[in-house]
Length: 225
Image 1: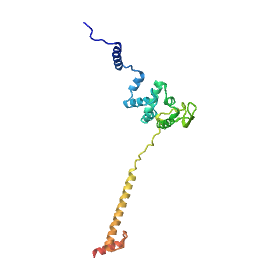
Image 2: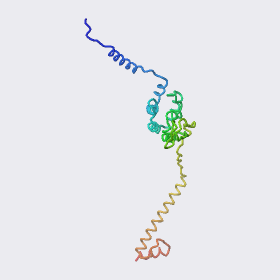
Image 3: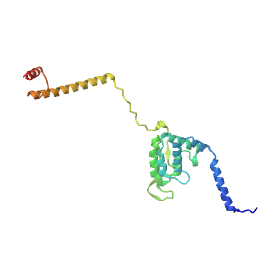
Image 4: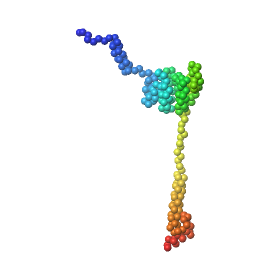
């Protein structure tokens, strides 16, 4: 039978490539790093991936790095420290290493903001500034001295600045009862004075709101008339 179909070499390679790619997608090799990340909560995985994408491979995006760092909790930061130490992505074993390896002299504002953000995790960072770029040219404004970024051990939850706890004091029942009685007495006294003033007005007496035996007797006499 005559062969009606003919594939040139280029078409063969294209088809083989499609099959190879599909097979790779189905049988991805599980590494210790991917296994570690896969076991994290989905929200934490997303944060780690976003932070990694801000400094890995195609160059650093300081704005994305900072915005992602702002979503981290102290526990997220500790976990990321553990991840860096254990798997050394792109050779970085610490957050200090990321900043020193990825930031240039013109990233001083970013370094300043990152330093402020790290304080949320109990991490104190320091850095140096320069007045010349790496080519010896004078900078119009101070720049970040590459590799000068340093952090303390920090990152422990015990070092995180916490808001002071508000303690609720339990009132003594006896004191509460005494306060209620005193308040009630004030209310009765005020009501009595108001009533007395109204009666004094009606009887044409001096409006004082005060009662004594003579005033009471006079009121009774006037009321009898």
